[in-house]
Structure formats: structure tokens, C-alpha cells
Image 1 (cartoon, helix red, strand yellow):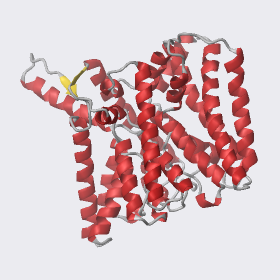
Image 2: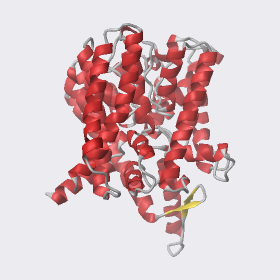
Image 3: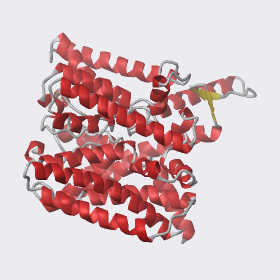
Image 4: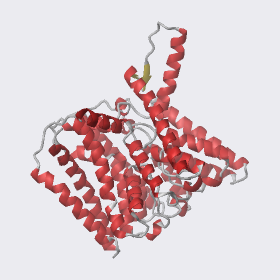
Amino acid sequence: MRKEVIIKFIGYILLFNAVFLMLSAAISFLYSETSAIPLLFSGLICTIFGIFPFIFVESHDDISFSEGLVIVVGGWIIACTIGMLPYIMWGGEFSLINAWFESVSGFTTTGSTVLIDIEGIPKGLQFWRSSTHWIGGVGVITFVLLILPHSTSSRFTLLNAEMGELSKLNFRYKARKIVHILIIVYVGLTVTQTILLTLAGMSIFDAINHSFSTIATGGFSTKNLSIAGFNSPVIETIIMFFMILSGIHFGLLYGTLTFKSENIFKSPVVRAFLAIIGIGIVLVSAKLYISGIYSFWDSIRYGAFQVIALSSTTGFATADSAHWPAFTHIILIYFTIQCAMVGSTSGGLKFDRIYLFFKSVKKQLKLLQHPRAIVAIKINGRPVSEQLEALTLVFIVLYIFTFFVTTLILTFLDVDLFTAFSASITTIGNVGPGFGEVSSLSNFSSLPSFGKFVLTLNMLLGRLEIFNIIALLMIRKVNN
């Protein structure tokens, strides 16, 4: 494994982060804030450490898969480490563990926060928080892939390490084209939502920050009360619409916009995904109304928003769901586990895997009846290999096992069962809010420091989809 190759690509990642740190510093200088120097100093550190390998380390036309894996995993960890620097240097609520938690939560687009007074931190730091979402949403590696030379084969290797096989089923393009599609859809959605939120009454600053969070399906807000702080049905509707779009496979969104045959209207997975969300909205809203918590229209308003926010892993809030009936909690926990589609910016188990799981169950039932039959599983008209089918089932088991272990650790630290269980699920799913002490309008500040650290590992496992971490550990073991 060539260390100079890894260092070169890590340098690209640092330089990209430096751009947003400098933008954040400029905003702080504009408002004469105390965070200007911490942000500027962090940006300079990023630039220096990023530009040295860019200048002095020789470029390579190709990289091995193991090198690509180290770049992907290492890139995320380096980004999270750099991301915590301005928080630590500014101080306030940011202890070392709080700064690490906020940075990891930002880059992994989890959206869980330890901040009690978000509106009390400078605008420059607020912009940096939202920027970490936007950088991490489509993937810090994806932005690096965009600037690689046309002829390099490294793009294909890194894309394979970053993007799962299931995600690539709806991408019938070369690696460079896939990267362009991701960026075009990502930037296009961000710009469009920013304009609409500004027209709906948000300041341009708030509109940009909330668009960064929405399209990245993150959930960081500039308000202590999240979206509830605006108390605007129009703003909520715009955000709900873009949360749904951001939870759909970007390849299908691109196909829809360019009138391709593979689009959201012809995809059975998209139809099933939207149908499940619709059922969830009906069930939650009906229970809220029957229980007399809200009026009919408010039940739909708040119920729909929370279901979409959790199913897309955005995690914004318009109401405190902690006080809702247990029935609604069960429905919302299901969506926290299911999450949105592969090929989107969402985290979690992914709806496609659940869809494939039930297809596999149906296949096994047919094989029980007709042992000699040849039964093929297809998703969006494309056959799924038995290897991918088996890999998906293994992933589901590992995913459930991971949040079970995390729950066990948190309860050992004397966190109550409901809080521990929901915090484990929401962090590995990169969703954001849970229930109990970490509900939609609460935060994670009351959890023990070691518990916060464990949850950040959960976030990274969820964002890197477990297998990359396992594969990296296996490579290291083989090399040793």
C-alpha cells in the first residue's frame, strides 16, 4: 500500500474543506464575530496540510482497491477531525467531546446536536455546521472525484469504495458521468430550495443553511426550535417536498429531468417508498387527531412533517414528538430504521434493502413450493445477483446487531432504555433526533461523554455502511 498516494488524496479533501472554512471565516468577519479567527486559523491549517502533498507528492494514474478504501475511510475521519477545530478554538459549549460529536454529526449528516443554544453561536460557526452537512451529504470523496484528471482510473476505484453495489443499479454510466450526475442534481436541488425558501420569507442566510441541511438530509438548523422556530406552513411544505426528493435515488431524479426511461415515475421501488411514507403519514396523523392532541389539519401538518423528516433521515422538527402517543413512536422508530433510498444522500438501512429483503422472502417461498425452479429477483428491471442478495441480508443482520450493542453500552452507562435504544438507532441511521432525552426538540448534551463518543462511532459506521470498516480491518489484518 503506497502511503504517498493516500496522502495525496487526503490533501485534496483538506483543500476542499478549507474553501468552506474560509467562507465561514468571511461571514464571521462580515458580522465582526469572535469566531472569525478560529475559522480562519482552521482554514489556514487545512490549506497548508492540503497543499503540501498537492505540490510535493507525485500523482499516480491508478490506485488499488485497498488504497481506495483507506482514502475513503481515512478521508471521512480526517474531515471530521479538521471540522472540530473551529469549535474547540471558539469554546462556549464545545468541550473536546462536544466538538468531536458536532463535527462527526455534521459530516455524516446525522444532525444530532449537543448544543443547547444554537442561536447563541456566531453565524460563521452556524454556516460551518451547515457546510459540514453539505460536504458530507453527497460525500466528501465525490467532490474529490470531480476534480481528478479525465484519464485516471482512480475515479472508478474510489467510486466503488464509496458507493455500494445496490446504489449503482440505477446508474448505467461511466464513473465520471455518475459523479457529474450526483453533483448536478445535488447543486441544482440546493439552489432551487434556497430560492424558494427565500421567497417564502426566510432570510438568505437561513435559506442557504437550511437548504444545505435539507438536500444533505442532515438536519442542522439555525434555530433552537428547528423548523418549528419559523412557524410557517409554507416553509414546512417546501422543506417536506425537498426532503422527499433528497431521499430518492439521484440517478432516477436525473433520469426524470432528462426524460430517460429510468425515472421516478417508472420505478416500482420509488412507488413503494412513497406509498410506505403515505401510509405512515395517515397512521401517525390519525392517531394524533383521535388522541385529541391537535386539530385535524394540525395533525396532518405535524404528522406528515415528522414522518418525512425521519424517513428521509433529515431529522428536522416542527413539534416535540416526545409527548406523542406510543403508537406514533413505534411508527416513527420504524422509519428511523428504514430511512430512504440508496443513491440518495440519506443514511440508514435504506428502503431498497428492505424492498430486496421481502423480494428474497418471496423468492424463498417459491423455491419451497418448486425446489427446481429458477427464480430471479429484479429491482427496477435489473437482475440482482445472488451475491448481492446475500450481502444485503448480511448487512441487515450486522446493522441490527450494531445498534443492539450500542444500546447495551448506553444502558451500562445508566442511560434509560428508551433513550439508549432510540439514540442508537438514530445515530447509526444518520437520522438525528430520537426519543426520550434525545427527542426532536431536545439534544444529546445530557448523555455521558463516553456515550457521546460511542454514538459518533455509530454515525461513522452508518455513513460508511459498516462493510467498508470491516473490509479495512481485514486488509490491515492481512497486511500484518
